[in-house]
Image (cartoon, rainbow, N blue to C red):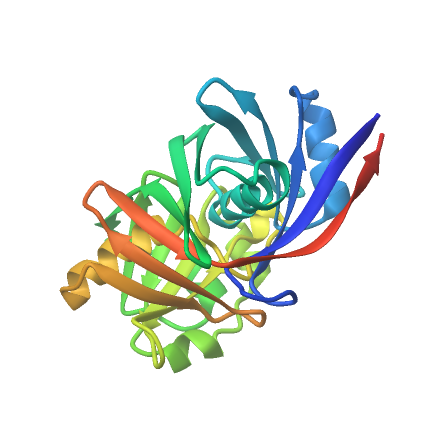
Length: 263
């Protein structure tokens, strides 16, 4: 069996930046064990698979270890493949997913994703594994609802950039990942994301967490449009808008690789 494979750098206007995602278009679903094996072989933060559906496409995402409920950068990458390689006449696409319907449309040089908004609830006492794993005390800690992430707020971009997490400790938080954020020096907010129990010690750019970041910073800064930067080593830019119970997350993408899987 031969399958097409693309590798797309999402939330970047050029290759070698942003977050690389593998995208594998399918005519019909393969066995889950095969999907997981492909994701493990790719060894990227996410591999996205999609199949045609009546309203667009069904979309699923796998890390090297397991399937996840939502992935932003691999959704952006999947839409990029559809718009640029498979159906160039399309202006928008609807994906059905484990997180409900997701929409992506062309927006000039960027693609804009329409995602559900996530809320936060305060944590009275943060787990020891979180504080020991981050090694630097955040000013506030929240839990993201829905989903499985801690949301930690720091005072400055420099604090976020200087974090050197103990990933062994953070892995104890499974199934929770860790969002860390602060006011940005060159953007509205600066963020990093750690999910070692999913095989992703630090994610280069994480679209899905902006479902929580956008409402938080929109409320804190009293503005609906948020310019976000994820300050990992590769780095990436996201342009977000708070729409109440939905968020718009925009970014660029670039094709790095196209090939064939033989299984």
